[in-house]
Length: 56
View 1 (tube, rainbow, N blue to C red):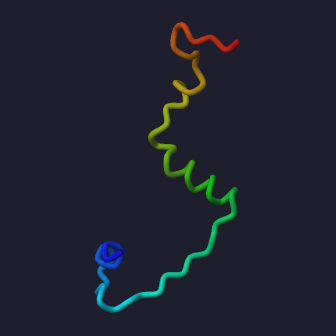
View 2 (cartoon, rainbow, N blue to C red; view 1 turned 180 degrees about the vertical axis):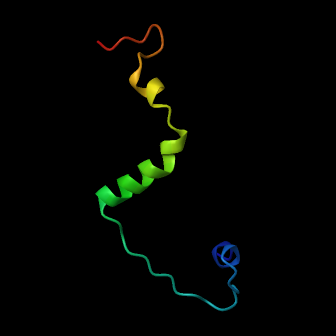
C-alpha cells in the first residue's frame, strides 16, 4: 500500500486517512462517458457490423 502515498507525495511512514464518498450511478456514468468520449468513433459504433455478423 506504500505506492498510493508515494504517488501523491506523502511519506508512507506517516499514515494518511483517505475518505471518499460514493458517486450516484448517473454521475459515475456521466464522468466515464465524458472521459472516453474523445476516443470513441461514433460512426464505427453506429455503422453496420463486420461482414458476416448479422443481427438476427
